[in-house]
Length: 250
Image: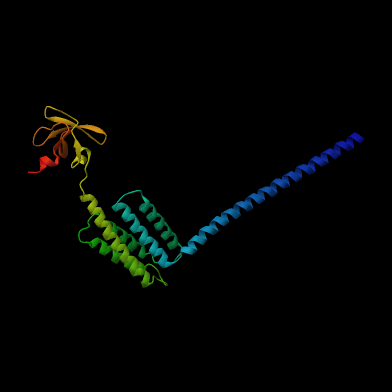
C-alpha cells in the first residue's frame, strides 16, 4: 500500500514539473516574440525619425541636385570614386527626404530631364547649351514639384545655378581630358636625357627607368660617355640628339 502511494506521488510531481516546463517555454517564446516586435519597431522608428528629419522641400531639392553634380564630376574625371560615392549617398538621401513629403508627380520627369541635360554637357561642352537647358529644367522641377510649401527662392535659384555652373565646369574638364594626348611605351621617354654607357657601330646603350635601351643618333653616330636627349622613337630604339652644351652651342 505504501509503495502504491509513493508511485502516485512521484507521478503527480512529474506531471506538475512537465506543466511548469511547458508554461516556462511558452513564456520564453512570448518574450522572444515581444523582443522581436520591439526590435522591429525600434528599427522602423529610427527609419521614420531619419525620414522625418530630412522631410524638407528645400533639403530634398538640395540633396538631389548636389548628388547629381557629384556624379557628373566622377564621370568627368574618374579617380578614386569618392565623388561618385558621395553623389550616390546624396541622391539616396534626397529620395528618402522626398518620400516623406507630398509632391506632384509631374515634377519627377523634370528632375530626370534636368539630370540628363546636365550629363549631356560632359559630351558636348562647346557652347554650354545643355548646361543652360539643364538649369532651366531644374528650376522648373523645383517650382512644380511640391504642392503647398514649395521651395523658397533663396534655395531654388542658387542651387539650380550652382548645379548648372558645375556641369559646365565638369564638361570643360571632360573635354580637356579627351583632348590630352595619351603617351604610352617609349613615347614617355621623349625629352628625357641620359648618358651613353656603351657604343658600338654608331648605336649605344642608355639606362632609363631601370632598363637598358638602344639609342641611335638623329644626326650621326653616338659616342660612349656622350649625354643625349631623346627626340623620338624608331621601333624599339630611341632616337637621340646630343645634349652636351659644347656641341649645342654654335
